[in-house]
Every structure is written in C-alpha cells, then in structure tokens.
Amino acid sequence: MGQNDDRGPDVSDEEWARFSAQAGQGGGDAPREPSARARMVTERLRREEAERARAGRGLFRRTPRQGAGDPPGWRTGPAWQEREGRGTGKRRLKATLAVVCIAALAVVALRPELVIDRITGKAEDRRGAGPTGPAAPAAPLAGESARPSEAPAELYPDRPTLTQPFRGSPALQWADGAAGIEVPEAAATGGMTKDQVADALAKAKQFLVAANLDPATLRGEQPAAALSLLDPKDKRTKDQLAAAFARPSLEQNPLDLFSRYDPAELRLVGEVVKVRGRMWVEPGEGPGQAHVVVDYSFVYPFAKARGGADQVERTIVRREATFSIADPRKWTATPGRLWIVAYRRDIANSSCDKYDGYLHPTFVEDPATGPTPSGTPMDPYDRSKTIEESSQEGCTAVSRS
Image 1 (cartoon, helix red, strand yellow):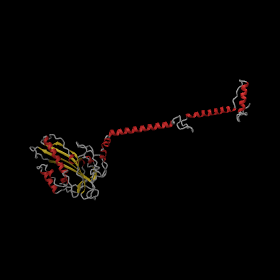
Image 2 (image 1 turned 90 degrees about the vertical axis):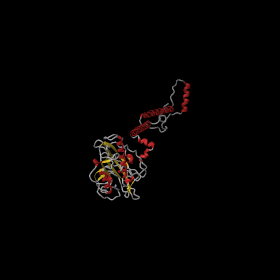
Image 3 (image 1 turned 45 degrees about the vertical axis):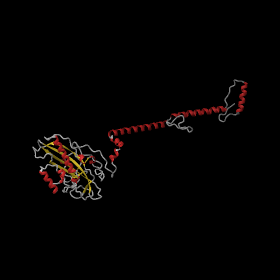
Image 4 (image 1 turned 180 degrees about the vertical axis):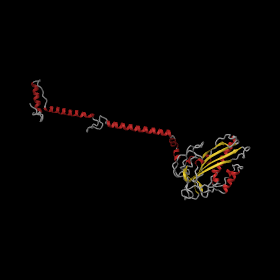
C-alpha cells in the first residue's frame, strides 16, 4: 500500500488496525510497517529536535535573548552582565571610600585641631558668632622671644566693628594690654646685680604700661606715674618733656614717648589695647651700667566721639627705647630710677601734618586733607625689621591697619 507523505495515508487508522491484527493472527513474522500518523509524529519530533539543537548553539553568545515564556533568571540566575555590573559598582564604591578615608586621615594628621575643635566646640569659637557678634577668641600667640623673621601673614581683610575692633588684624592673636609686656628672667649684667637688673626690668614694664595703656594717659592727661619712674638727674629729658606737653611741635611731641588722643574727637572702642613685643638686657657703655632695651607695638581701635559713630579705625604705635641703670658711685644716677638713653617711635594711621600731641587716625568718611601718603606701603605689623630699617622719608602709606 502506497503512502502520500504530503497528504497523509489513503486508508483509515481503523482499517489499518484491523489489517494488522489479522496479519498478526495469520503469521507472527510479518513485518510491521509504522503508520503514516506515527511517521508524521516521528518526523515532527525530529524537526523540533533539530530546531532545539540549532537554538542550543546560541547559548554561547554574549548577549543571549531571554525566552519569551521563561521568567527572568529562571534556572540561569541573573545575566552575567548584571553580575559583572554589580561587582564593578561595588569595587568602584569601595575604592572611592578608601580614597576618602585616606584623605581624611591625612588631613587629621596634618591638622588635628580640625577634629579636636569640632569635638570640643572650639570650631565655632574660631569662626566667631558673625559680623556683628563678639570677636572670635583666637588663641593668643606665644610671647615674642626674638625678632620675627617675617611679617604676619595677610588675613582676610575683614573690616573692624564696634564689637570686633581687631577683626581682620594680626593683633587679634596678640596679648591684651599689660599681659603682652613680658619681663624676662633677670641676670647680673654690666656690673649690676641680678636684683638691680630685675628691678630695672619691672620698672621698664611699669613705664610702658603707664605711658601707653593707662586710661588717663590715653585721654591726654599728664602721665604722672610714668614720669615718676624717670631719673630726676636726667635734666635734658625732663626739660624736653615739659616743653612738649606745654607747646607740642614737630621737634617736641608728647607722642614720642606717650600714646594720647583727644576725647573730644575720639573714643577708644572697648577696653582692650593689643600689645606685642619683647624686652632684653644688655651691658651698658661701661662697667657699672646695664641697659634695658624694649621694642613693642600697640594697637588702638578708635571711633569718632560723636554719638552714633560706628566706623572703627585702628592706629598702630611701635616704640623702641633704651633705659639705663647705673652704679651711682661710677655714674650720675639715682638708684631705682630709669634714665632714657634713646627712643624712637613709628605711628601708622595718624595724620602726618598735625603736631598737637594727639593721635589722629584717618576715617573713610573724612575729607582728604593734608599731604597724601606716598612711597612703598609699609606693613605696621611687620616686626622683622627695626624702625630705622623700615622707615621712609615723608608721609608713608601703610598696607593695612
């Protein structure tokens, strides 16, 4: 019986079954030919198997397609790109965190105060309460034991205010008033005993305080306490000072030794004057004489005396002086008194053409009068040179105040 592979068998399955049964009854050795349906099923299964085999070769592609009927990750887990992407992201995150930690440790090693101040609350103190709040309490500098090698660093030029008169100034870290005048340890010098030198050092500090910090002296009153420390046998100095107070002039000016302002014109902002400098002892001009040498800068914040004035300007006065003590058996001297051997002063931010014995700081609101400052601007906070080394002719401009 023939078979049409395209159209199917010519007899029905039932007939073929009966035929096969009869043939089986007639002889067990007759070969059994598969039915057309069986051959069709077999052929369909073969084609499906071949297609699965061809599809199976696609599993080696880097971007295999997910079957439409399979749930995501079914049996196979997440795709390798997803696993690699997650791994790479984690590795990058760990590397970034490691770099940040190393940088943070380096900063802490170099600037431990950043962490300590944050923990103790001092960070806010360093920044201050704001433009109109109280001045940030900066840690005071250690006493000046030798001449500085350079000027203080330039700070952010914040303007001073009535509540923060030293804002934007290196003086913010200077000592307050008399605390900035430190007396060194005394030693026998130039034939003078240790006790005599110690007494001279103490009296030199008393003179500086009375001449530059005493409120009465600053307001222009007679500096009686300072004058009482000077040797009455020094007729020349005594006469010069008397003339200076009576008739101030360019040649004889109380400002040469004393800091003074006119209360009708100015008022001191706050009660603090910032001070920095040092004093030391040297042998005198011969046996039985010793010199106390002083070099100090004083910073005065001023405002106009009129009511409602809120602009603040600073005047910086630097003083160098040499006081002598001597054995009265060898020198003309009074025991326990100071003889002024030499003095020099430099005043920054004060009128160049007024010689009335008072400080006259310049305010922005003031009209331009008098000589115009010229020359290379001088930094009044630079204590790396002596006054003589840094002085210039004429009315000198200043770089800051």
